[in-house]
Length: 497
Image (cartoon, rainbow, N blue to C red; front, side, top):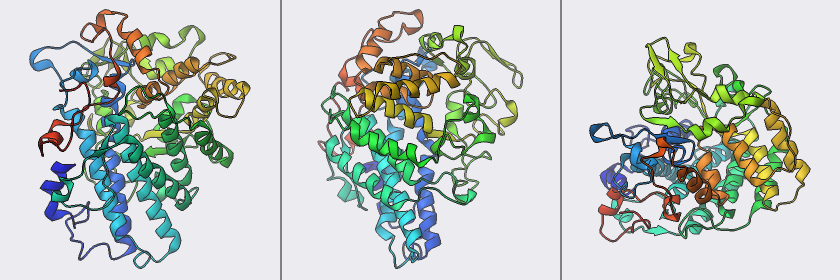
């Protein structure tokens, strides 16, 4: 944050997505809307950043042992090394989130009813911006714990006096912003041009996720869980989404991830992508029109290969193949041959995002148009089941019905008296490679138990990983560049050096 502001102090009065100065910008509704689109655009790198700092750290993935020049940036992250403060993959989410926050603060500084005279449009643009600012701060809290709070435009010099504050204090802004967004945003949009814009229900779903994370056991004093026990608050929001009847589970699991079914009833909020390469522009959702690096990250379009990031054999084995789980071969397969480039992969690989259909690929492996689902309706239902299992009002029958609906779509038989552990296992298979596994383990307090049991398995493919981790691995280090910019301003997270 400090590096960004110090380098750009003279440019802070410029619109984030152009070189026009504030004197000639932010004077019309169209210009305010363009600036809001610029906040959305910051989401383009979210899937890739999320993958490296959540999925790669979970029991769903591991890295192939490497030495010398073949060691990649994600290797020490997957291996829980304590010297990763200088790692570029630790820096990227911090920089990206604060870039989005700066853009949001810029909009909030200039938007007014004098400029945006239509009240509905003003409310929507204000609600979108507050949602996105809260979204970026929630990401920071999950990844780094305590962070600096910047809720207005500041200069580089001013940034040098802003210290990290408690997670609880950051949550105050997140909850206030999302609560405002719920009141301001529409329930839906009538035009296809607005596909991908956040709605009231997207804000409710993310706020429910916030309450679930806050409610988890506080295994780390500076981590994202506060043991707040706010499961009933989350349940109220989730029930409002469910009762709206705006969403539903698709009958076919594969269709959720097919280009022809994008923006379906399954999707509450996703990040919009379209192929065509970097910066081909346009209004939202076309504004996120840069190449989708997430798909390259996990080895797609058109060259398959995970570049040493591999699917855990434990995850692959967890799919109930004897019961014909349709998510099994759809999500992960062995021995996939890519005829386009003549490449074969014998280890388990991700095949979830319709990469099996070569007709959906763009011009190269960085160019892929599939949207990234941030919040699916199935997740809304399963979070409801989690709330009930954690003590919120509801019945075991409701939990069982939700889980069995998910299992039935996957081709599995019903189960009864579902436990939290069983729910987590079902979520693992359902939301594989969607950035959910690590946050699920953290917020339920299962992260150390589950990860240490997996690490202690001593499988050959885990030979480079530690035999166990402790609470300090729940969050990542503060990027070293941020610590170095001013001596004594930030302290490093415990356990990192």
